[in-house]
Length: 410
Image 1 (cartoon, rainbow, N blue to C red):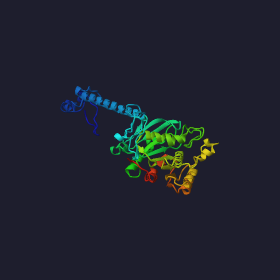
Image 2 (image 1 turned 90 degrees about the vertical axis):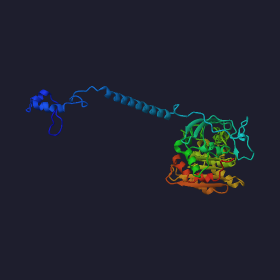
Image 3 (image 1 turned 180 degrees about the horizontal axis):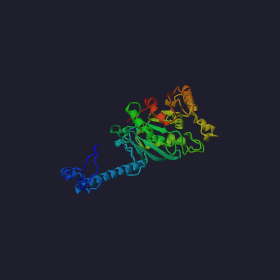
Image 4 (image 1 turned 90 degrees about the horizontal axis):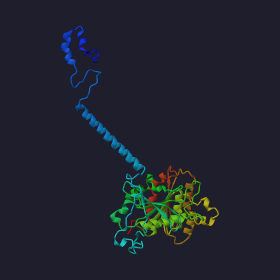
């Protein structure tokens, strides 16, 4: 072959072609061997070369390697999809969850389900009967949000309750300790789910974080459904026993606490029992503590309604008044010897209902005295949603109630 002036190879030519060039045979004999393709350069340009066996082997190995990597990648994708859609064995959802048994000979439940323990103990061992909890989700620290269906013996209502215990609950140093309980109530329909049970809002991880920072007690969380059905027609039950309706007040203040006492080590006294809730769940939390101060000591009420306003109260003015936080608060103040309660309010200054903040401010100014201790955090730019309320709980409200509550205790 020859070179063109720009350095690019010219097409390969036959010996006869070279012999026709002016330089003659001597040129081809002298220079052509230098340009003949020798192994491993292969045949002349444009002619396919049959790969030698030695060259085919590594290519075949590469194909197997690529195929193996592809299979592993597809398997990983499939596992991720199965985990996302909660298909066993790639998820532990639905598996039985045990939150531990009473520790020590003095804490084991007797045959009748009642726990044997010292009379002067501040802790209450699980009373039984044991509920069947199924795992709803597992957190990064290994703790579980579990769910059970509770057939409320006192309310007659049957519904779901989610529970969670912090990792300290299974710490051997707390094996004989009773833990404080927070009953967490959602806003909106609160049915068929309680949105606090989801980990996207970070309530569980926040409790653990705040406890580690010394801001909070290590609360057990109980997260029941709030209503007996959806509120798609604007119907809700105000967390109350409205005549001729499911007894949601009894469900929230008796059946749910009884479930927790039956299955967890808790605090005997009211000093270990609190509520929290947002919107209508905030109203139900506020009302529960004011109506039953002998049972519950504190509540965090986020963007709450202050008075009952369900349409189901029509024709039941007496019962409606009995579930009005303003009237309940006034009665507590007027009654000598009422136990102290602690109400931590938080409201955004950009709530969708512009009456929420002034209504809460009025309640605090009017009833925040005597046995009723209040705090109010106004959240700059805060809106009427749980994503606003959870992080701001750690900026005052959780400390306010944790200072006056007990647990873990023995």
